[in-house]
Length: 221
Image 1 (cartoon, rainbow, N blue to C red):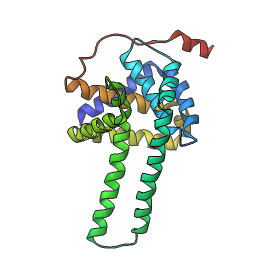
Image 2 (image 1 turned 90 degrees about the vertical axis):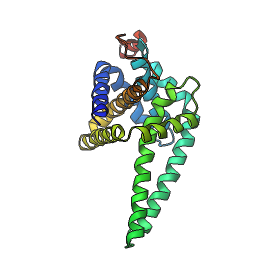
Image 3 (image 1 turned 60 degrees about the vertical axis):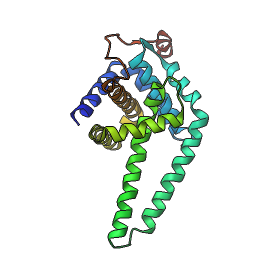
Image 4 (image 1 turned 180 degrees about the horizontal axis):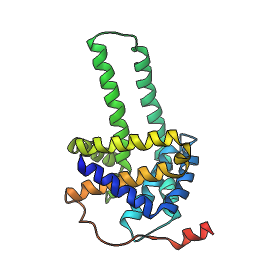
């Protein structure tokens, strides 16, 4: 669990290091999330940006848009699947809410667990997708499930921190507009890299510094 908290801290440090780039892309992420169907592709753009920042010597505005464009079609499918999945859970929950008894308590517990698992897996999928030599959505989904099963306490620490960020963002909506997406992307990317390094899949962290792509400075004027 301590490893998870350390990964969150390192992720927030990465966010702080490239703060202005994350903030501008976070605004785009918010706007592209509003239509719902483009929300997964917008999240993929944030993950692509964070992955590039943490794994490449330069990163820029174009990394966000590349991630968005290359995941737009599959993102719409994911959005529709999410709507259907959570709609079924919501209907089940509300339909059986008045029901009493051990069996119904077990069912409600299973639905809650399925909701949490779905959220966690989708947080892991993006960074794992970009970590693959030949990325596929099915492969990233499989790897995300494996990562949850192999790192339950690490994942629990991440969930707690993600929940704290979400609560703070809800209390101060300006955080959603400027920080939340970038911070979550940085944290989840760092967390996945941490687990891949712990498993020996990625080499130890190198001291290479991150540099903003000069083209992004042109956007800022």
